[in-house]
Length: 527
Image (cartoon, rainbow, N blue to C red; front, side, top):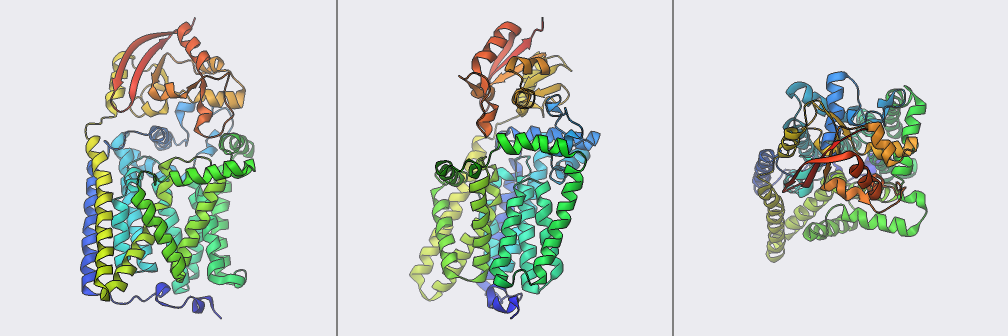
């Protein structure tokens, strides 16, 4: 029997039932609400949230790609360009949108974040298309509204990072897979494998979703998975993407690629599974859940959890595909991803909210003859939308006076043009015309060259040093550098740092920024 015959029923049928007039009008209203949310998001583009450490970091790399043709973050000159073909460590496809934005509009925070905002619109369109394919227009419209009103989307569509781009690629790959199943289109399976494979060159996390996509073939085809041509078309696309990755990142200099990977993906970002410690893996599960701020947004947690159970119990093929896709990817994140920052939440949230939207839509339809049930579900939905809107309006309003360049303008007032300045990556966007170096070079010098902190600073040899609250937070009472994976790998020995400042530094300015804390600017003397 053909696999498409086993996937019978309306949920994966290419023809959808004609929606009732009320549903059509409700869908239109939800679409208008989504547009309004996106416009409000644009108005707060540079004020919320405060600039994140990775934004200038990515911008530095994209700016070099746009202006010099080199995919490298110049703030790490010295520590991370000491090998041939040193640029192989950075994703190329992932940096292209930001590089294109800078090539067209010049360098700036607005241009950087506008790229993510535009990709956010693309993501909403892709989620709508996926929801309409799997379920209905109403479910698709409700999903995009809930997503546009989520804190996760607001953050991801503002941060100048690649996570929103990766979310687009993952959603597109899943959409193409569904097209292939529904319409029996082999090209769609090939394209799904290709997009899923190429997503690795946006961010390495794309590999986990590519595995999740492959797992769906087992759900659809079962024991016939290796005998169907669709599987091999998908594999062909993935292999082609792998050949591209080999040619761009490994072939130019395998020794460089694996040396950098040894540090970055090995010791510094060691997967929880590699520890073989059940306590570490359990802690990874807890922090993976914490990534979504469910402890603060308990209503989101309750509705997402309940919707996953509802769709799992309903056992429709569309539900099985979506729950399997999310479940496999989530498990892989628990086992393999050490970093638990909320920046990755956007990779799952569209699918979480698609399940929530379908649960609401399904229960409201079933409650047509049960008015109390329908009223109850409708009230919860309205309150959920209101609660979501409140969670994005309040922080936007609180940050309305934020100006990233207030900090860098103050630094410019005391540091002469062209000087070599060291500090956290945060401030590169406002000081790009300086010879700016990241203080995180110290960790890389220690790992790759076995330098002490003092030797690392001597290698950077800054003329000025920005010591802000973030940098102070990296100073720990420890002897030497830590081998702990994660962001704590950037921790610095406090005594050695303070001793260096006392011997070589002279404080020339001190000020406080409401969003970024206390700043001390030191002039460094080299005797």
